[in-house]
Image (cartoon, rainbow, N blue to C red; front, side, top):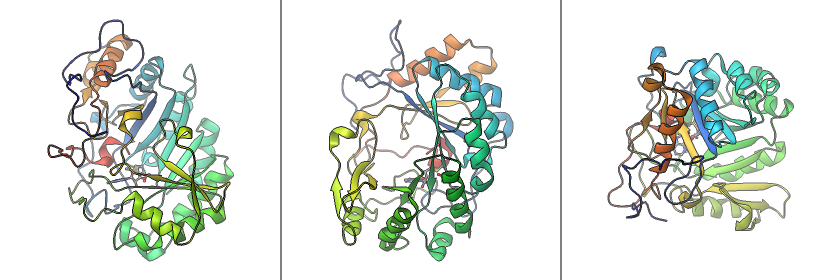
Length: 348
Ligand code: SAM
């Protein structure tokens, strides 16, 4: 799949009257909602943010808890079955436990997952699990303290380790670890990270670095590709691919490690995109709906919501945004333009 718009996809059109759920013009249906609950973060990962951070959203520009839960409820009414809370760093939203509790009361109850850097999870894993959080992905790119500090510009590896332990103890399982490899920083230690995860029962997934950094410093020629990660892991482990049919809309290609049952995932978001099977939709902390990480446009819900829009009206806006979803992200094509918002402000 390339990112070139199909002639049949009209990027300015509205969903036809009577549309049910969240389909697009190519027959994909969104069922997985990524919600950024804050754009702030307490790490400064080099592939994501500059050292000085970013101008954060002011509180009045952000959805309040009531607004957030209401909008998530509208998505659930449109067929969304899984909510993934992310950011920024979701644990920095003070009301997170309460938000999870309220989302878990929606009917039909969605599955609730979270992507976090794990800092503070030692304290929050159990309250979040009690509130209804089902699963967690913790981002961890290296288990070498010096590499960690170099990559994230913060000396917090120990906090992440405590967070991971607490997540497992709270039953937020399988605990998944997400890693990005950067050339010259942690690319030589990907096999160490896999061994570390195997020893602790965490399921590791590597993801290719994408052009979503605030500094616009991404460079295709230096990106560590899925193929390269695979080769480096194979120097130490035997990897057996799981059947492609088991993958569904999941982005990771999974491999049994040394015959299994443990697996490792590799997500080739750039070199082998999975846009044709994408079932995602996104809501930013300031109430914008995006049909793709790489969208150039988004649909505002915050304004209409504060102007008194009904759930039906909000639903129609969300359906319109999803109907316009393009076939692919287009990275690598001549007309690809990196979106204005960085990953941390969209919600990874
Ligand atoms: N703060 C949380 C965390 O660290 O998981 C959630 C937000 S973070 C943006 C979500 C995920 O996006 C993390 O796993 C991070 O490594 C990943 N990420 C950030 N920038 C990326 C990029 N340019 N390419 C690929 N992944 C990226």
